[in-house]
Structures are given as structure tokens and as C-alpha cells.
Amino acid sequence: MKKIIGVIVALFLVYGMPSSGHASPVTTGGEALFRSNCSVCHSMQPPPKTAPPVLGIASHYRKAFSGRDEAVAHMVKFMQQPKEDASILGSQAVARFGLMPAMSMGTEELRRVAGWMWDQYDPAFTCK
Image 1 (cartoon, helix red, strand yellow):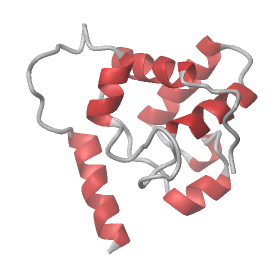
Image 2 (image 1 turned 30 degrees about the vertical axis):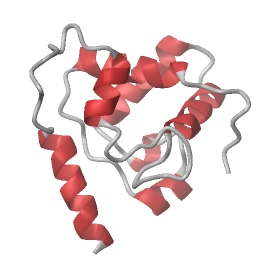
Image 3 (image 1 turned 90 degrees about the vertical axis):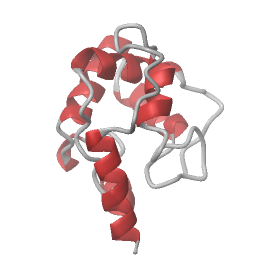
């Protein structure tokens, strides 16, 4: 059953959800893109939905990269072509959640989402 739900969620992520038509990709910010494309799987904080929470992702990226631009570039590449050996979250997260499907958003949209995720870092948050 969990695999079926994962497949359904993956299809929504790959092919997208119906748009309200109110915002164009050019004017949509990272948070709005996250809410319409990523929040189906990613919660902001624990407990997780079907993917790691944003605060955990942001924490791992802050530990792995010294700068925003480098981290965002890595996130974009990972969202375009997720691979286990490129996961900053490590093999435990991949074993628990599996790999996310490749995102169908354009590169600029992915940059906005990744930048927004980097900015969600909370130094008080601890990954478990």
C-alpha cells in the first residue's frame, strides 16, 4: 500500500497538479512553488509526510555547503536527476523515504524553491 501511495505522489510530482492559473512561473516565489509542487511530500518540520521535512533538509545543506549559491546549484541538480550517491541527506534517508522523482519544473523555478529551502534553516533545529 505504501508503494502505491508513493507511486501516486510521484506521478503528481512529475506531471504536476492542476494550477489555479493565478500566478505565472516567472512571478511565483520559492515558497509558493514549494506549496504547489513539494508540500505534497515534504512537511516543514517533523513528523515527515512521505519525504524528509524542509527544516531537516535545510540543516543538512547548511552543514554540507558553506555558501548558498553552491547549495542551491546542488539542490537543483539533485531535483532534476535524483541519485542516491548525490543525496546530502545520506543513505538512511534514502532507505527510509526512497529517492524523490525528478521534478518537472524549469531550472529557474527549481532555483527559487532551492533558495527558499536554504533560507528556511533554523539553527535551533536538530536532525534526529
